[in-house]
Length: 477
Ligand code: GLY
Ligand code: MN
Ligand code: MN
Image (cartoon, rainbow, N blue to C red; front, side, top):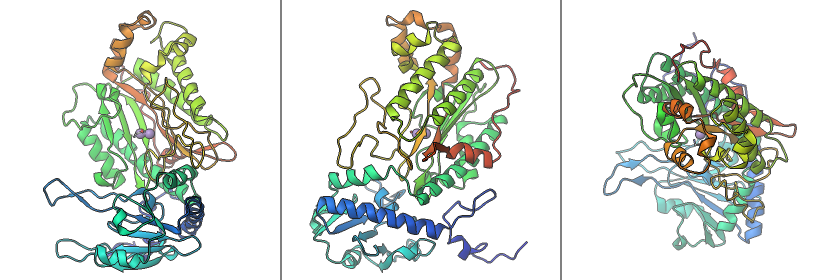
């Protein structure tokens, strides 16, 4: 075993890679080269956006530390997306000055006080792309930015009183949001890494489940395996046992282990350099109709991933998902009508009330999903699918989630039961499935010139993930 220095193994080496990029099965990547290309691509996007809006450049703020109301306890800091697009490290209160054709200037706030450890001096694979200045106070940081009168400011802490030409100009942001749907190779690498980390977490949680675990313990197992504290997660994990799986954004962590586990739905991602993964898996507590339903959902999700290609309208893909849900409902006898009727009369919307997926990147729900051109117009979702976050035609470089589901949500089922289509449903079977809550299978898919690449399934296979045990005891609903 090589001798380890006090600051850990190969610290200098680690700085050449993003967080989480180590470990078995990780491809060797030249992160400095990837990031340099990324900065060039984003520089081009900013130059075009600045030209379109008639500004000299942009000042992008990283975001300020926030505090609890009437308290000095900090709210966990999260860097703002337009800053994270350039800088993979966390620098609260800092700013970036981007002038087309120039090396971007990073003004890094390094306040010194004896309550806190100041942020480290910038170092790592990414620093070569910036002119870096450090400031000890916010006022000094503003001075280091120089003249900003012809500049557009981006960020929650940007103030008109700072003398900018514009502050959070919606047209400028729309321009950037439109183009950020197409990921640079560096961004794809980050999302791939974030998927590897999430896959390890999901696998660990499923192992703990086999021994009997509460939602709280499952979440702990996930965070342990991913090496992430909760505040670093790209979104709050959804860790749902039994009927909680039917609550789309279930937000609690029950500490009690249920007497019987019918189902486990986990929707949990990871962060790599500010880029997110967003992954859901569902498994059954035993064999039976629910486990069979998961098998069908998994097969139909793979089919939708295969259809995620250049030139496909995401609205059509969402409609395909409803046609496939209709087929699954009919094949499993949940509906007694034909699949054509289940689709045509909108019965599937009771079982799949959310959209098929969304853009993914710096934010879990990257904006720009309704923008059909850099300056608009906006393509609102169809009236019958109001929650669809993505209505664009897919292009190479897009990273999207594909996350069909089937849920047993009492309030939606009651509407169906009390309406004219009640006869179309096998309510006895639905009653048996209600304790299972629901199923969601969610992968992150990169659209390529040739078709698509499923970043999540690749991550699970590198992780040695074994799907839930087929020979589980026959005690499932
Ligand atoms: N994790 C939130 C979502 O799947 O959109
Ligand atoms: Mn999602
Ligand atoms: Mn999700």
